[in-house]
Amino acid sequence: MTSVATPPVSTVVTLPGHLRRRAREHPDRVALRHEDLGRWREYTWREYAERASRAGLGFAALGVVAGEKIAIAGENRPEWLFADIGAQGMGMITVGVYPTSPAAEIEYILEHSESVVAVVEDEEQLDKVLAVRERLPALRHIVIIETRGTHRYLEQPDILSFDDLLALGAGRDMAEYETAVEHLEPGDVAVLVYTSGTTGPPKGAMLTHHNLAVAGRACAGTLGWKPWFDTLSYLPLCHVAERLFSVAIALTVGYTVHFGGGGESLLSDLREVQPHGFFGVPRVWEKMLAMIEIRMADASWLKRMNYRIWMRQGRRLAGKRLRRQRLNPLDRALEGLGWLLLFRPLRERLGLARIREASAAAAPIAPQVLEFFWSIGVRVREFYGQTEGTALATFTPPHDVRIGKVGTAVPGCEVRIAEDGEILIRSEGVCAGYYRNEAATRATIDEDGWLHSGDVGELDSDGYLRITDRKKDIIITSGGKNIAPSWIENLLKVSPWVREAIVIGDRRKYVTALIGIELDTVGDWATRQRIAFTTYKDLSEKPEVRKLIAKWVDEVNASLAQVEQIKKFTLLPKELDHEEGELTATQKVKRRAIAEAFGDLIEAMYR
Image 1 (cartoon, one colour):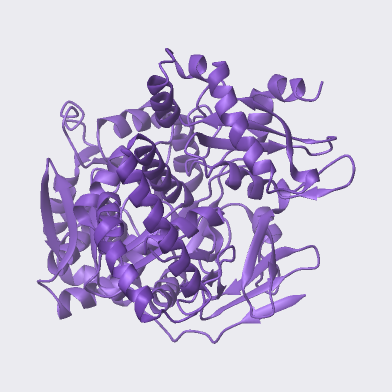
Image 2 (cartoon, helix red, strand yellow):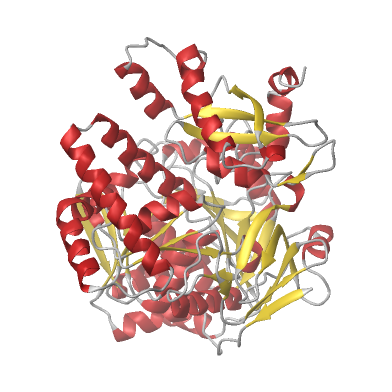
């Protein structure tokens, strides 16, 4: 086995403790900003701490005691954090629920976690909880943040507004909260983070106060983010990575977190905030690249020529930086000219004009995507981790970036490759196990404290990790060849025309793929080609669209080994959907569900 370790981090405090310290040391500095009806509402560290403590005391006034669970279902907003840190400060355990979760999934999580209070954002989330409430015996209260359209429910004694919750907390002695925070045990569970559940029901990873504080401190020391940074919170806060960037690292470092409109407004939010630090999942970086490529396809010949000239220079200069070569005076001059003529307006358009530190994680990302952003001066660094390890594992150091690899072990973390190629992780970030699932805990965390990631990878002689694929997803063809499908899928998804790609071939003679088109970009292309269509299905069945995708598949095949090449593909007749069980809440494909739903299409490619 190969193993790499780095020295441990020093003792840290809890996240509620960090918030109290921030409120004492920098009470008037802006901690949070929230866009509401076009205006930005600011919260200082003092206001953040006051509202969190009132929320925690409000839960106590409802009869919630330490160790009981508070579920939070809603989009990213300050109240999410107030409820989260407030409950943690009182020794309660918070449970994040994805706002896109259907009622059945909400029922499972609230029932399994035994949540006694559900904090819901609005009428939509309230309706989903009410639809399953009679099957949730532990649930005692519902708290509504946005009460518009819900006033008829507020007359019920067990349903109240978030303002009412804060008022209940304001009626109690603040010293009660201070004392509770001071007496938090680092080893006590702080949050339950439910995994995306690609192969079965979600499992609740138990992250302790110590897990979260250690992860916040380790990432703060590795990322290089500064207290004066602005960042944008956009991934669901129940996602462990967003919990780190918007809560744990933010409380540790002290930078300002912005909450925009969320969802489809991400790019406009980015343009307005222009963050200094930004974490993006691969899909976000891919969509930005696709947007630029589409705009360039429609641009005048002069703009296209300007784009090609300076992107060529950008790639050359990025290559020198990645090889750690110094730029000469001519390089510096060309870089400055490129900034004026292309890179500055392009980055402003993307919302990345002020970016100082950018990172990518949560899924594999194609090298071509990273190379594009490095070419325009956005130096995206990859990191790797998972829910059960509080997202701690590896991070790419700024002085030696190797595209295609996800960096070296972060401080306090050991990374090891098992005999079968599985990546094993051991650190103070490894969770306390899965809630109410001893069998899954034993299968994931061994007696020596090693977290079995389920990923397959390789460590080079310098300790850099390369992810090959998910262990369970490796394809073994009928000819005995091992193929990593995610590598091929990521190459396919570089195209602005492709949204989803599912590579198939386990125990088959050759590799095939189900491909989902990107409705917006392909629809725009079809309109410009004067190809009439009505629905997604109608568009995907157009022979011209199939030719468009076939051309791209041929380009991808040219870069693959013979055994990896896609011999046949089929365009999906519909967009994959979370509510229909085809995607997880984090937009990961559920391969088993896809195989069942589109079995006839798959079999047709092998007849």
